[in-house]
Amino acid sequence: MKTPYAGLDFAIVIVAAVLAPIGWPAGIVVYRAIVQLIPDTLRSYPVAAFMWASVATGLPLALLYDPDTTLAQTVLLPWLLGQLPATALAAGIYGVLEGWLAVDGSRDWWPMRPPAVTESVDFGLALDDLPMPGIFDVSPTPTVGERTPLLRDPDGRTKP
Image (tube, rainbow, N blue to C red; front, side, top):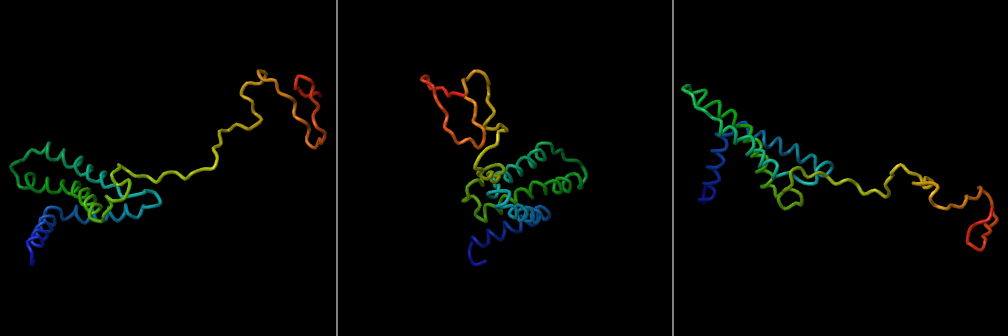
């Protein structure tokens, strides 16, 4: 520890290792599992989702905590329940440290890969299906293989 910043980093690591010895490694495992889904299922790492998940899972613990007289219920139970928010927080912090905030979509809740572009959409209707038969004056279609041109009368209608 030659600089004050190195000493501060060391202190942060020691405090995190003491407060979240289960949540920190679990956050690394979650981070690596989610990164494996990119680019097939996800288009980027969901940093915002993990940060807000740590708030959503940690806030009820802080609001509903009622200390008791025993050491286990005063210290150990909240410490053990705090490992879940620590897991989500560690996964989010590793996403920030690995630079995922620079990737488009990392601030989305769950940045799914957009669907592939399709050439055409099948609505289940064929070209010969008329929406309202009988309204339009339609000439009969010639039989297949007929090579003679259609004869038209002076009104522009085809003659049979």
